[in-house]
Amino acid sequence: MEDKSALLITINIPGSNPREAYYKEMEIRSLLETLSIRVAFHIPFTVKEENPNTLIGPGQAVEASRIANETECDIVVINSFISARMEKNLTSILSLPLMDRESVILSIFLKNAHSKEALLQIEKAEAEYLRPRLRGRLDNLEQQRGGVKGSKGLGERLIELDRRKLDRRINVLTKELERIEKIRATQKKERKDGTVFSFALVGYTNAGKSSIMNALTGADVLIEDKLFATLDTTTRKMKLKNGEIVLLSDTVGFIEDLPHRLISAFSSTLNEALDANALIIVQDLESPNSYDNFLTTVNTLKELGAEEKVKLLVLNKVDKEYDDYNTIRLKNYGYDYVVTSVKENIGLDELLQKLEDITELEEETIEIKAPLDGTIFSKIRKGDTIISVEYKEDAIHMRIRVKKDLIPYYEKFSLE
Ligand SMILES: Nc1nc2c(ncn2[C@@H]2O[C@H](COP(=O)(O)OP(=O)(O)OP(=O)(O)O)[C@@H](O)[C@H]2O)c(=O)[nH]1
Ligand SMILES: [Mg+2]
Image (cartoon, rainbow, N blue to C red; front, side, top):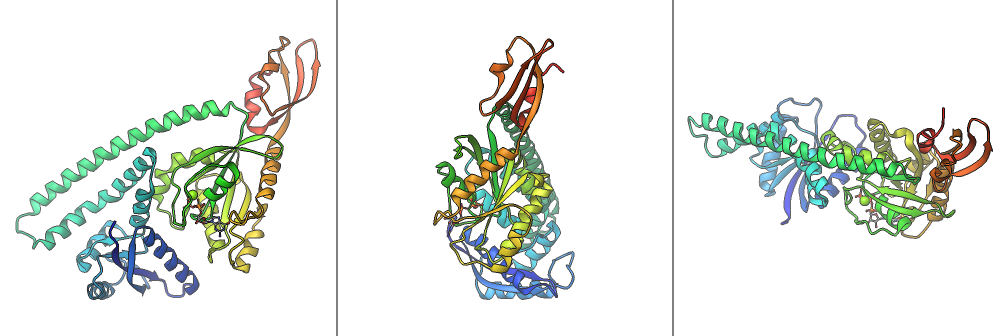
């Protein structure tokens, strides 16, 4: 893709923290870099109250238009979410294509998607994003063409047509995604009967999740110094030091203000990963905003109803320079943690040990009464341990140490 040059608009609310504003600016700049969009000029507008028509004030919009013109920008990027109405009005003033934060993130997802499912999920999110914006875009196009009198009727019909096309496409995508999800659910059921304990790595984008996945499992998941390198969930087997085989999944990263549409588009892939027995949050220490990024992860997990599964915090990239205050806050948040560097091979051994401790914590001793025919012995899963066996008149009374999520499996064989 040819490099585009952009006018970047960020919004400052009076009294907001300038440090935070600075980090947010850095973040949107790296998001744009991923899209090969060069920031030619940046305007931080102070906005006391959101204008419902243009977000920024109309005077500010005109000012932005003038600067974009002078600096010969191809597009205007605004690091906020804007409504269809705001988009229409702003584009009309700017006379340039406009991207908001959601559109930027959507484009990155689209660019980085590899699997069929990821592509379908993004296409659906994009179609839903576009639908309410069709009218505004068409109106603006007509306005640029000089607004032929009487063309309103044609415009209306075009919008109707496009809208119907989009609706049909959204329908097809939804059905196709449901089909894929069904296949996955069946596969998951089959896997659930196995003994394998599963972990999922979650966390802010670029924290080093895929790097840790590769280091621990020898997988070759793509690692890149760019945001949202991973969009698909990958699961690999991993051997703990005690010889136990467990599963480890790598997932799509989170970001502050991740568009809700994308979370829901990715919910089936994400939920599959979040279904793991334990979640490991990976947070890099390098980010100047590491603590806030971590809170974003925690809050996203809360929204997805998976926060209780978090068992460990991995503080990665300790080889880099990092902010002491943020790091202290991360360590004191309340999760057990391990400090690592994949690059310098620091803490990975301790991490493996912690994973082993977690699997052990997640086991429980249960008592079952199995039929006297002895078939139960062939049903005991590898990795689970028979602690005691007593042959009584009514049944075989057994105590077994099992993985907690296998308790229902064993209960099936119990006589009561
Ligand atoms: N210095 C240093 N760099 C690291 C370390 N771990 C990962 N990185 C680098 O950080 C960048 C991001 O790593 P990834 O493993 O792709 O991060 P991720 O969390 O999977 O990112 P997304 O998939 O984009 O959400 C890459 O350039 C890695 O080489 C580390 O311990 N130290
Ligand atoms: Mg990754």
